[in-house]
Length: 405
Image 1 (tube, rainbow, N blue to C red):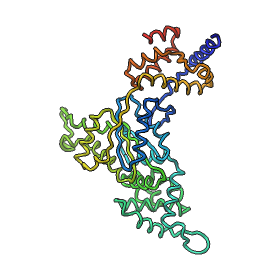
Image 2: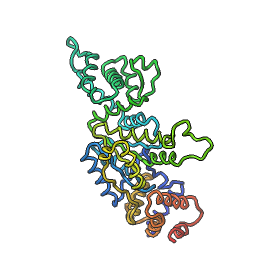
Image 3: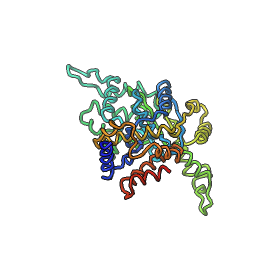
Image 4: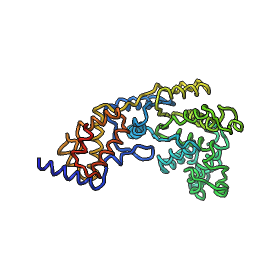
């Protein structure tokens, strides 16, 4: 017992340094989340993976209330979908959609992936054929002609496609333009002089260029592609803003059209059109997250007005429920184990695997009940409790007692 008490005292001293074991817990599309899903959600994960691996172009809605852990779901899927490139975008930043999407895709996969795609494409287009003599010298103009003949029927904007073929072939076959071409393919912003040197009209900020480049890279990747679009409610909220109307003296509709055509509504319609247009990319799977089934039905009504055939892409929604009672114990233990490992004190949990110190089962159960199992709210309360343990002059017994009641 004395050893246990000494180990508890050591752990409390670690906390008193100012380290909150739950403060660092984050789940965003940019910051990797290390924790796995709790047991009650494994069936959901398996269902999503099964749908992704056994379908081509689909839209899969995931329904879960605010704070249920939809972004945490993204990281869990990313670890488990081994045969797919899984990337994330939020509609909080919806401007330059295709350019942002392509940038996220390439940033996730890295420059090595881009070089490999460019190399394989040029080889398909005849770059391995010798132009003359013993040494390998490719006929770059012939390669470009072959490329355009092979794939142009699959692309709407022929000018964009031609420029992209020129950039890819310059990257692989023209040593004097390789660096500039790579920067262009990575989505770097180009001024007129850079574009003139590459003999290109635009960089990838131009909508049709970014979409065409996205289509080429995804369709020529050896792995499948899963796009996880978080916060799909953004589209609905933009549309609702315009539908509510305005009682201001100046009504924007005088300049921008009737009530259904305000700036916000037009922005929402455009982003929805762009997302639906992604289905022209072969075998892309899209996961969208929403807060309610009503929001999903509203989205479907908007899509039906555009093209009801697109509704065939929608799979039945899956639901991300809040924590069950046992989940909070598992969640707490997993996070504490990661924390103890980070501070090189894992032996505490190894010797006392059933301990929830400095909390206890009753405290954790009360936390879960208080917020109806909402993971985000559970996390907020855990941060609050540990902040009190770290910074308060109250004894641990008094702090824990206040949460037990």
